[in-house]
Length: 246
Image (cartoon, rainbow, N blue to C red):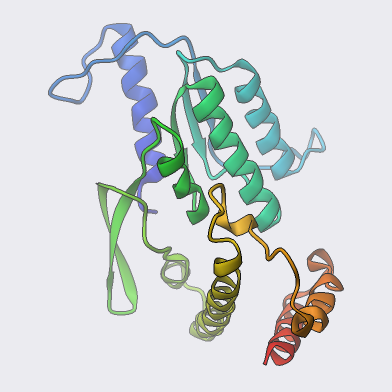
């Protein structure tokens, strides 16, 4: 709701207007010749074609990666959200890097994966911007202003509250979020020293050798199949892992 998708669509409309020889909503503009506009925006499955939301997403992404050129405009919004977190993040990161280093198309790539913001420091020509927002009490106010740099946080719980999700659900989600963030911070502290030389994507760093004290915890994690867990079972598994950690 910050305005990312609207901002991206606006860019495509301005390009179309300019190529038609029309006025554009700006004091001035300088736009080079573009051969095509590619978009990967929205999320919907294809029931008639037997394709899931993720399959539709990947089909559109494949078309872009095979056909875009350095003179193309690419709009990609939230690629990778139709599958598990790590799969989605890996695909989004690889897709963004391929576009930036191989295709070199002019691209607006919207994402909630904070890990992707490291590409701006690794690949020439990449830059991070975000749509500004501010918290007001327990709620949120979207300022719809484009600011430089990556966003420093998400506002998913606040948006859920705006949508009318019951307060007790929001409270449980906030408690669970705090647990996950605490677990992540502990893991980052343990892995940071072993992976301090990692330059690609810190998420994928892992210690070179497992410590004996973590063998039991590691075995417990490997025994979990996230795709088969209900929300209740996932929470119970998290408590078990935390007990092992302590």
